[in-house]
View 1: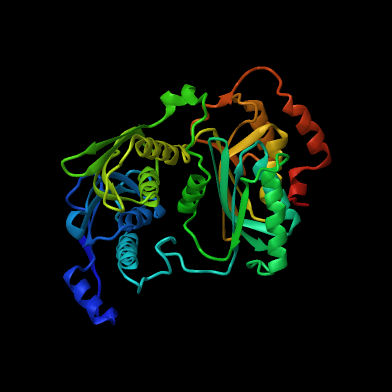
View 2: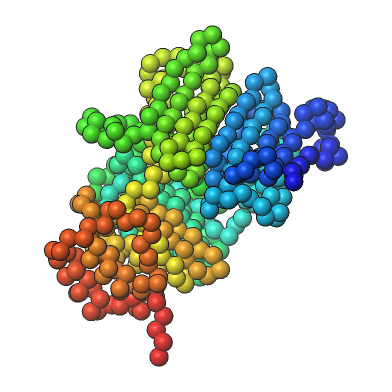
Length: 456
């Protein structure tokens, strides 16, 4: 069965726009018959810079896995084919989800093609409506052990509740987008003086003892696509720069190459790396924000390795012009892929949400010499669903006894080790952090922290 979506021309008032859309209507076809192992999504439309990213963003935000993609947009026409599966590797068969995909992709195209967009801005997440339910805080600065703990402690002290957050660290830099609410009202924080105070306090935390001018805090009430903003923030913070002694990590980097095809005035970008979820979004997002247009592309990610090939030009129509520009493209794409690599030990926390929860949990990590290298914090229906990627602050493998102590104190069903805990050290020696736990939990149990309920 094929699902087809075409735009209703009666929704456009301007006669010129009606004619343009009648000649080039967005068309989305979802096919579950032609491919044995995946759902095939075909997208045809008039072309404009940013459309490819919007479509990939829709598929990524729905947690679909893109196993193959073929992209062509020469001659002002955009034609894409995506093979997708769900998280378990199966075809997408739920009719409600298929219909939702059709509507979102069609709307994403109209949003990029004209001023009567379905949503407010192509920079925003497709399908997300403006809301005053929370205040968005963007943070960038130098990474250090315990930074997330310090930031969340300040927010708790200022009576802010973190309802959603995403934290990335890469190449000594850290960036975060946090959605916070007022502890008393449960809504967005609107008082200008209070917002200024929050911003000032967070800037002081980010600067630390160095008083670096590179720390930055932005507070807003607008909506944003979190992953895209994180890429933009880290790019602006120049996290793609390499240290002089970074040659030791050369073998861990994705293999990125850029050559010019002079006969066609294209630059050809090839990327070989380990496959992972959202890889295509991360690379397309970076190329788009660097003002490059993808004219053709081929993506294959059906095993542990992913291969991506892009034929690009700068938005001014030129290919990559110099060795310096070529090196910058390579570094920025490497950084885009590395930012979301799931290094460290993965811990998942699921419990009843409350003000100060994030502060308490990350404080326990910090006091036991664990540093958070990436985090995803979400709340839904009063439940906190938090994922942390942690490492030993000294660079050693995480001591399994430390994790056992934390889980025993919090609750085995509340904090879980997920995936393959390759960074877990199972040495027989006593961890020095166990003494820290002994003193800590004699005076305050996790019943006091509110992580588990006390029943009498």
